[in-house]
Image 1: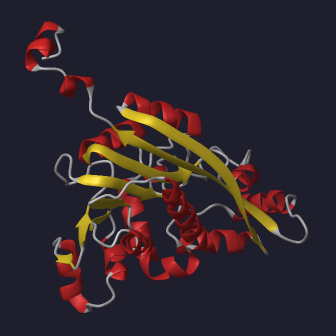
Image 2 (image 1 turned 180 degrees about the vertical axis):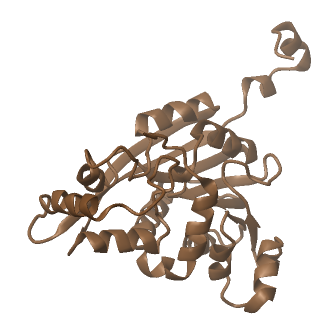
Length: 296
C-alpha cells in the first residue's frame, strides 16, 4: 500500500478554490490563531515598510496587518485565485478576477498568485513575512524557509503559525488499523522547524506551541468544517475512491469512544514561531578577506 504523505499541490489549490465562498464562515480557528499571532507583535518593536502575507486566503490577516501598520505596503500571495476574489469584494465579475490574478494593486495591497514554496518575487523585497497556518501545506519546509529568507530584507522578520504532529489526533486514531491509506495530512514537529530555520540562516528563532480543542456533536460535523475550509486529505497516499461503508462505520465507532461530556473533540496542535534575517558573515567581510577565507 501507499504510505506517501507528499501533498498534491494541485489538489490543495483546487480545494481552497472551491472552499473560498464558505471559508470565512467556517475558519473560526484560523482567525483565532491569526489574532493570537497579532497580539505577539505587541512585544516586537519593529515597523515593516513592506509586508508579505504568504497564504493570504480571503484577506483576514492582510486587513488586520494594515490596520496595525497603516503606512506599510502589502503583498498578498495565495495559490487559489478564488481566495483573492473573496479578499476584494469591492469589484465584481470577470474584471475583478482579471485585476486580481493579473497582479493589479488596489490601494496598498497587491494580490499575487503564487505558492510559498516558490514565490514570484524579487530578492529582499519584504520587511515582514507573515504566514498564518500555511506551512503545513508545504512539501519541503527547508526549501520554503530558504524562499522566505530570500525575499526578506536584511533585518527583516519572519512570523508564522502552523500545525504540529498532534493535530487531528482523534481522527488519525479513529482510522488507525482501518486500512493502509493515509487519512490525515502530516505535520512537522516544532523542534524540527526550529532547526530548519537555523539551517537556512535565520537568527534567534523563538518557538512555542499550544493545544486548541474544538468540540462537535458528531463526526460529520468535524468533516464538514474541514471541507468548508478546504482542509481535505491531499496526500499522495490517500484512498483514491470513496472509503467503504464498513470502514467508515468502524472509524466513526472508534471516534465515538473519545466522546467527552457529550461532545467529540478535534485537537489542533498550533505551533508559533518567529525569527530574523540578519546580515551574513559573508556580507560583513570585505571582498579581499572573503577571498582569503575561500568564500568567493
